Length: 311
View 1: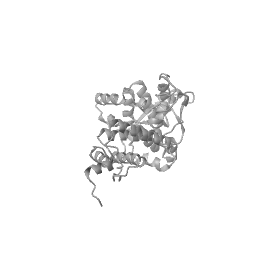
View 2 (view 1 turned 180 degrees about the vertical axis):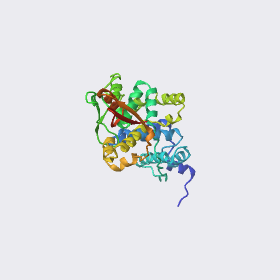
View 3 (view 1 turned 90 degrees about the horizontal axis):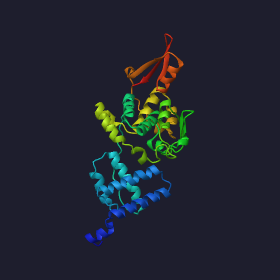
View 4 (view 1 turned 90 degrees about the vertical axis):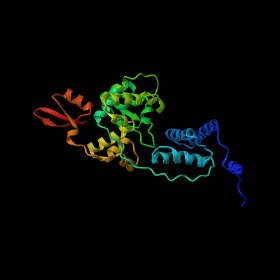
């Protein structure tokens, strides 16, 4: 076999793509995925990874360059696996031969904050951000699903919101809102068809990260820095399963089609009795306000109704 010279090796590997060429290739790849029916969220995720690889100095035409950039990147094994999968998809559609690295996803228990910490974060954020957080807390929907909500999906009279554009092939569903959440949503300006803007970029571009950082410093609670939009989905799943012990109900709440997906979200943590706040209601109006605030009825004692809520 004839020896391959260095200049021949360069020709085989392909000339290094210039930034403008790499950008064009990524956009072309995104369009191919769209034509093949991939979800918008999946396309955005894979495009973001490819752009990150280019920013790290990787050459999309050179698999070894991709491997080197992923290996040197200071991220978790799970993130490296996602980066490898994203490039594998790109490589297969551009006739680039490569051997995908053997990164393994690491399973970790998600951070579950106290309800008092979530409420403190909501109270310290601006009107739009607070409304998004309250909505996610009460419904457990994904941030992408929240961003797609239209004003017509909101039924203030019934106190419900309809998820008609679910993510990740989930089921559409109607979710209950408290009077507080409905009021916060209704107070937002109706400037467009979508409640929060329609795209994740517009939804999260509310200064959330800065507000969270400032609030964590003000309250001297670094745990607030671990609360993300998706954290509230984990919190809702965990608390609802612990409250009802009904995995089918939680599955319906999250919109999952397979119960195995629900089990991945459900964390069977133990809530101690001292993690409850209690309140009493002397009449129907007081009871109604407690229920809207998230309290659940316990029993009647000495002519008053006793309620409780997790801290």
